[in-house]
Image (cartoon, rainbow, N blue to C red; front, top):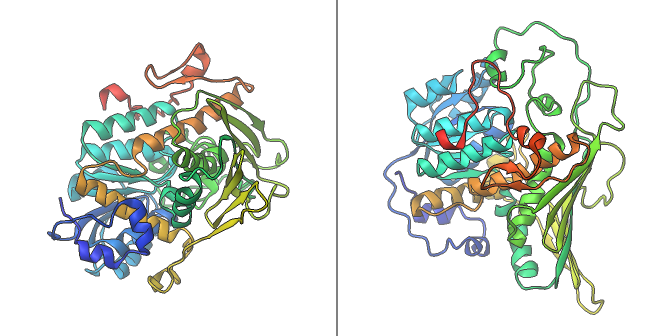
Length: 455
């Protein structure tokens, strides 16, 4: 493979302490043989954001971009040309399968809507590429199982975009608070999102514009009547394409807590909720939902509301880990340790920004400046895992567990709050045929659902 140059890697590093936390200070990359041949599938907001972070930390030649929206695709191509060393506009494709066949990229980034993640990831792996796929990795549980099976079968590294594991202030908080035992016995965690992020409009049905291939964009999902360009964010308000706020936001915080506390599959999951307040629009995802992810002597409790006030305005999208000696709260912006002992001082952890080191960040449209350093570290970790033949910090299996847990919470809610016990060995919900049947979503005609045994 094309490897990174160690000196250039270290030149782009944000902090020695953060590097040490990844075990990267002793890394020994080979001399680079040439730029990494990279392709992006899904050239919208976050796909481009991921790609630009990779360009910042490695010698990259973007050989192809893919999107069913011709206008978005052209704009992305022009923007990439200004960001990569060669100055070239990448080859532009409507169909990702054509991109994979013609360009044969070594590295594929997937930033498409959730309902496409599984098929695109598996096809990229089959084509010989390592993959960086956005979260949630799938829209049903068996899709996720198939993605894990494909990564292992084709011996490729898949990094999931749950970059809280690469967030410098959260790495510091884990090392200083969790790993040192400051919290004592931990038996309760709260994770939440109170952002008013649920689109809920009533746009009219209209003709599909000629620059947009709506059939291809829809892919294996049900074909809804076209009521406007689904991006940006409109698609997230429909369960046909994703898993609602739980699948979008809980997956991040649950994954962070699992990483910090070394948790695997929950023993059982229970969830209730629905559309309680925002009933006026087309949206069919819950505006209110609670879920309990149970572990031995530990509950992780999720809550979201897309209306009203946040429970804690300082931490509107966050986790709070409670021990008998203190509490650790964390978000994308900060973290705080609050000891139970009044004689012990609290500890605050600030978000790292790198505006001076990467001035191009400041003028990038829609960039999340607080997340950019984490994504850069996440990209470096992925490339190191490829070079060293180790698993990346957000390996596909870990992303699958966090994604599937959120999907199971939604299934529990849809079944009236039934407690579900998923067995990853048999890939069934124990003693519940109805819930097991929901582990696979039906695909639209012309598309075949991936299966773990036949990827």
